[in-house]
Amino acid sequence: MGEELTIDVNISDIIYDWNKSVTEAERLPPATSLSIISLSLLFFIIGAVGIAGNLLVIFAILGDQRMRNSVTNLLIMNLALSDLIIMIACIPDIIQFIENKGWRLGLPLCKALRFTEVFALYASVMTLVSVCLER
Image 1 (tube, rainbow, N blue to C red):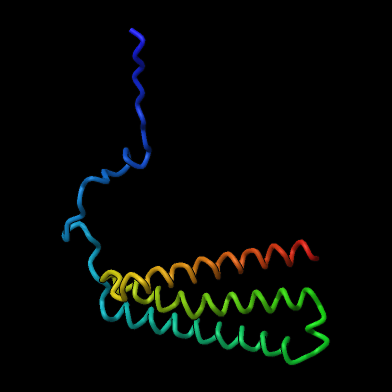
Image 2 (image 1 turned 120 degrees about the vertical axis):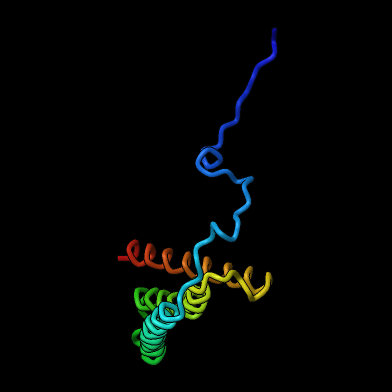
């Protein structure tokens, strides 16, 4: 009489059956060579412009003594540094993701890259919040 029945419901289990293994036929097909080349070229251009722009900001602030005295400029330099790390770490990862062939660089590099990406993204967002609060 005193027994209670509890039912744990997880919404994600209702939406998707996690016990079902994904077969090869259910996976999305690999990207075509043309789409991989096109998107790789696009991300290369975005990366080159982003890396060059962020390096210019960093060198401009480091090169001028008066600019280093401003807290806002130091925060902007920190933002440029974190964005530079994002460009260097995320763009090769995006290109590999586009190929849709799985991770091929090993577990240690996977963990290091994920840590670097998340760390740089948080640093970027927190720097933007700091700039807003400092203003």
